[in-house]
Length: 425
Ligand SMILES: Cc1ncc(COP(=O)(O)O)c(C=O)c1O
Ligand SMILES: [Zn+2]
Image (cartoon, rainbow, N blue to C red; front, side, top):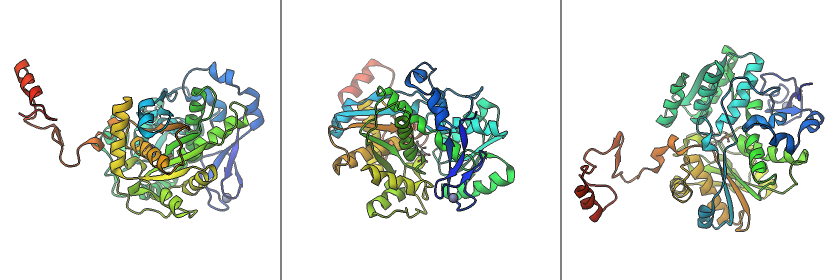
């Protein structure tokens, strides 16, 4: 008996058979996966999960895939680390960082892609594709390589070079588009129909989105089968933010954790903050941002598909959605690296910037147990830490010509005595 019973419209509740569908024929609402809850309850227990190998497939019953894939990358089971030094700086006694930059392609997108790719293979697709803000491109390229599928990845032409290089390294065909993520997303709908490709976050979106729940399962298990008081997550489309809440709710439903009123804090960059702006204005639909302007390119979605759901969740749980200026994001990246030894990408800086703002407005209080999701690796966006006023050490190609010391002890001593930040020629 399959555990997945079908798809359901999130607006009108209409049922749709399991397949590569993503939109309700009756009302054009988004679809989500439904499960046979009795079948899940029959096999799911803490002991059963703990006895399984590391990685996202230890939560198989709660994912929309019947069997773990035979060829795939080792995704998930990333560390949840206690961050006392950063917590102290932020005025929080119990802060945990979920370091999801340690996935195979250095971002949490490996989770959603693993689930979508497994489903794509079950549906018989031979080509994986995506509309990406950067990280998804690398994740799709790698998953396709591991599974022996073709990959086409579509990105805004201004994304970070490290992310372009990464997707190309795995042999994907990269299509740079002169446009925003939202324009690429619309283009993808047409391509998916015409070419019959599995766009993980477009026509396979209901399955793809379920992959983010594994972050919630891991956090709860790593806390010793408990939920935190506050969960802080970045928001681009709003899928991750809403799915971690669904993940926690499922753990309660199946008796794996005690119920708890978790507050959900969302993070958006000020230069593309449609959901945070709607939260601040108290309206229930985000106004799309036509031209995102931010260093947090991974979160630059101007018209987020799950925006209204994210807003509802922030209000219903007593959380908030914070808008974080780029300077605060860079400063937070530096703080996480220097206080905790974790180099996270801009989305992680934005997330910790949101903690600071939520703390200031009293949504997060000092005694709370707070878990923050660091969803990408700093090596993907190293330029975000460069000195905007003109870097003494680097130019565009590397360490500046002339900025180095001769390889002698005397030269070192001379530099050390009259030390400035960068050694002069
Ligand atoms: C590093 C990183 N964090 C978070 C997100 C947010 O994802 P979502 O679209 O699920 O809100 C993205 C999306 O691209 C991302 O790249
Ligand atoms: Zn509908």
